[in-house]
Image (tube, rainbow, N blue to C red; front, side, top):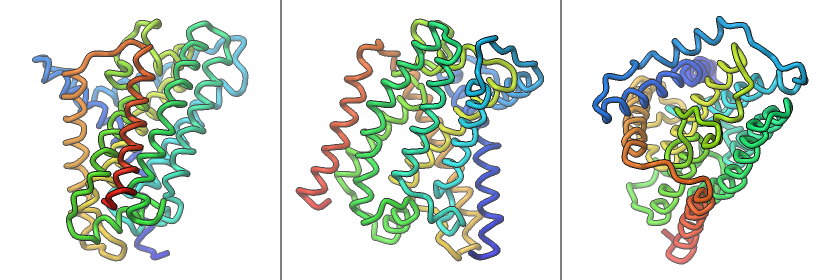
Length: 315
């Protein structure tokens, strides 16, 4: 491990944690502009987090220790996932553990704790949200794994760092299999991050919520950690999409002079992805709950088609 790699890893860790709410604010601001509204501003998520951290949490009498530690587990898991994804450099200390399958495991691990914590108090809406969340995860995780297998087969490795190095080292090639995988990944991103058309992150109607029903019993710093973890998860998913489908611009190991340019390119990509996500949410309407299996089933089939195209055509 080079001594110069540690500051870069710390920079990515701080960037993931600190800039994730800014991405949520950017998406909300873009949605407001598209709806011809002024919007609350880019810093609105930070104001919400500050307000929640200053409030005293109210706990149910039946809440167990699991209910109290679940927000910390969610935040830690999302921060770890964001730290191991190669965002602007491949030569980081966490690069050896940036395995695609392990990354899916981290997402599944945090989902289990979120569902258990929602059912811990025993309220009707918490249990309903936990069931819906597990349904979405049950359908989205296989699709995400199949999506990750397509670039893994191209690069002959499940390591995200190796995948990025393999795709950027080769000449610019259009892979039809990656096109199917990119569409499937976008659908999984919308489902896993509670975005329209699968879920509405701004709704307050309990009967239509999926992810929001998990944290109805939380308040204060616990709710702040959950909201912050959700923002980190969205940034991490966008970073995974950048690493898999548009990795060009990521600095290679040892090229420290390219780091400022790589960081700038990454920020531009995230800004463009946030604006595209806001546009997509503006054009689409939230679907009924019973249509979600069809939506994620389509994502799974597109991911499988990408694998078949790679095996049959070698592209």
